Length: 299
Image (cartoon, rainbow, N blue to C red; front, side):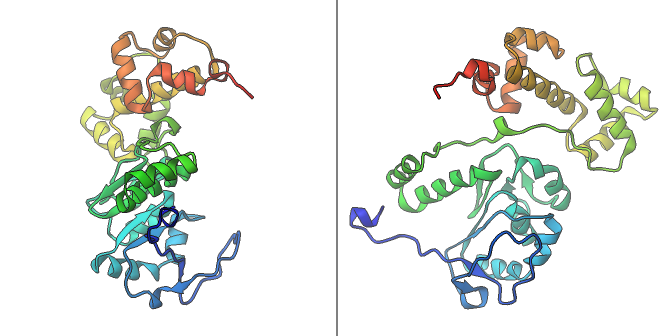
């Protein structure tokens, strides 16, 4: 597009590979790199794509990239990751103390593997001192448009967004998050507390009540719950209730007030504020977006 405007191309894009590629499991396709990492002594921007498989496996397979990325960053290169590529980026140590995001589905695993990173899993993308990350799946398009705007200007970014029909300036992946409860931990008492909340979320649930049920002190339960799930007990109750509300909005024609009472709230202002905080949309906007009967179709 810059060439069409009589300007020089801004980027020289290369696919860079390892000198000794591993035998990849579940190989989907072959890609021939333009250059190997030992041939690239300097670059302005490194983009780490999403990766397939378990994080530990693909970090091990791509271990040779880590010192190269670290060295390039020390020389002034900026670094970006798409989706779960954030795991490989975090393995370099460059996300320690920095805000970052990844696919919401992998947020719990990411926090466990890289507690030093400041994960904000509701964000579509983050920028922190030349380190960029994007959320799940196609949110990488928003990061690409952001990078185009940073290096080529707003005019070109808008042109790109229109040409590829990308919703520019989208900042949250909250409307896409499905809360499934963080149960990939080994604290059985906390799991019991989670199950109790999920079965009784319509009722008023207190930490003292859960503590009595599990024969655990309030302070100890609060500490263990936060450590295991990443949420306080109150936050967990809220997220379970909001997820129940989302399912109602998706599948029924119930009024917002009706759903609010159904999941255990009576303050409409408080419910709307909480719902938007968790989902990124107001209850009405969420219902209109995801309820097929209300959204309608022109097809």
